[in-house]
Image (cartoon, rainbow, N blue to C red; front, side):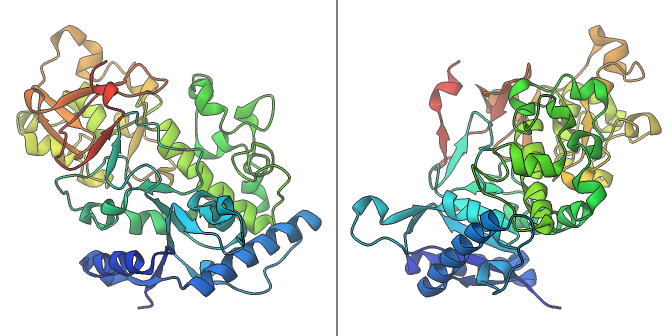
Length: 404
């Protein structure tokens, strides 16, 4: 089969080769991908060409085509270091470096590249206790350089440290392509985002302001279409920038709205809720024989709905988030479940019987409460108290979140 391409973009060739070596050593990567560091001259060509496309789009918005293909256009996963040498810099010390975020923005809006992963913007091996997700940045995922070769990032394998917020990258890569295809029609690109994604009106009305403002673009954000989001919200195209054509509108919208779902909507666990957090509140959704087996609880951190071990009767299934290919994991609408009297804990909340286990966000598994450390996330949600194992060598920031 034709392998997909991972392109590593770092001005330090030694570091780029080191990352390539680490990735090539992973079976799940080697099976599906070819890993290539980007040469300096090719990086310079990419940045120059992206800037030319940007200017051409401003002059002829919506009607420009790509004339010359560049490396980014043929890339399935683009890995960017945060600090890169600026190919346009001459004498100014301030201009000698270009932020990876600038490259991520240009790549997302003016190339056909797939998933974008930014490294080292927030440390080389960090875990963000705020759980806020950096939705304002254009990389689809922000990681530390030491985390890029984590087996749990590239497969369903669970490792000593594996942030629950991470997707499985090969799946996320394919999902992004499918999202763009879905939106590459006049009907879908002009449909309101929340309607397309299947958000009921009563759920749309309770979205936190900071969450719905990301979509922006008009007086009633819940009516914003994908095209309006890209062109007017400031979280698609920036400032005076314009799209090359509708194909690029679809690509930008697909990536940015998927990140909005993953990093703004999901973390609060009060609009959409995933299986580990759901089972923490409603243990009765596990079969009775499994409720005292920690392995059964850990099983709920699967990314496949059929492997969760949760009782999937028709009633619970009715509350599933239907566009499940837009999320890295199964999820349900919390407001629907929390008032559903056929769930034991809803019908008889005073009689809840649960083991003293907590879900740890940093290892994607459950631990006894006395083996985990509680922290307070910075989210517009009532469910901000979370838990972490605290793995040696990982930088948990900001530390004050442990003491609130």
